Image 1: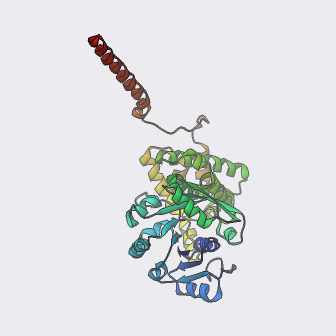
Image 2: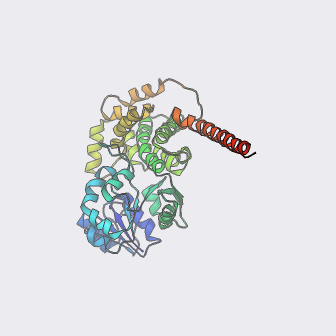
Length: 375
C-alpha cells in the first residue's frame, strides 16, 4: 500500500510514522525543499520531531502530483484554515487517484463555520471516500510508541474500518464509528477549552480549577455537538472527553501553551508572533474560538466558555476577568442532556399510532359492511 501524507509538521510527521507500520511506502508532501532533503538523506525531519529517526519506507517530496501517482490512501495533516487553498491546487490529482482520504486536522473554518467534512465535500465532491480521525494523540508520543488510541469516523462503517486498519497496531487502537460530526466537533472545540485551561495554569491555579473547567467544558462541547447532530456517547469517548483531557492537562499542547502565556500576563498578539517566529506550530483554538462563539449563537446553544475564550483573544478580557466571568455564571440543575426535538418530532410517533388505529378501524368497518351485504 502506498500512502501519501499531506503536511510535514509535527502531526504530519507522526502520522507518517504511524501508517508506515502498515504501509509498503509512505510519501510526505512538503512545501520545503530542506525538509524533503532532510527526510530523504538524513532519515529525520529537520524542523519537527528531529530527534526521531524515520522508518526506511518514509520519503518526502515537494511534488504532490508525483506523490499521488499510484496512491492508495491520503492522510491529511495540514491545518484547517489552510486546507481549502492547498487542496484546490491538488484536487485533480486527488480525484484521479481515487485514494481513501483520511483527515486528521481539527478545527472549524473561521469564515464559513464549516467542519472538515463539509470542506472536503465542497472541494473534492460528495463521492470521494473520506474518513476522519480524532482522539488524544500527542505527536511525540506517537513517535516513541506510547500506547495510544483514537476514533475513525466515516459515513459508511466499512469505510471507517478500512481507514482504522491503516492506523491500528500493537501500540495503537483505533475504533471505527459513523459519527463524523461527533468526532470532528470534539477535536475542534477541545482546543478552545485548552486555551482556558492553560490560562488557569498560567495564573498558578491548581487541579481543582482545571478539573472544573475540563468537566464543564466537556458539557459545553457536548451541547454544541448534539445540536449539530453528534451522538452524546461520542462526546463522552476518546474523540470528546479523551482528547479534551489530553489537550487541557498534558504538557505538549500548543493551545494550552498559548493559554499559559496569556495567564501569565502576555498579550495574545505577542504570544502568536513569538510562536510564528519560532515555528512552534499552529494553535487551532485561536481561530476556532471566535468561530465556535458564532456557531453557538447561530444554533441558539449556550456556550459561555467558547465566548469567554473568544473575548480573551479579542483583547476584551484578561485572564483574571475571564475567570471571574466564568465563576459568576448562573448555576443550573445538573440534569441529563437530551437531544432537542421539535414539537413535530415529538408528536410524530403519536400521530403514526393514531393514523394506524384509524386505518385499522376503517378497514374493519369496510370488511364488516361487505360481509353484511354478502349475507
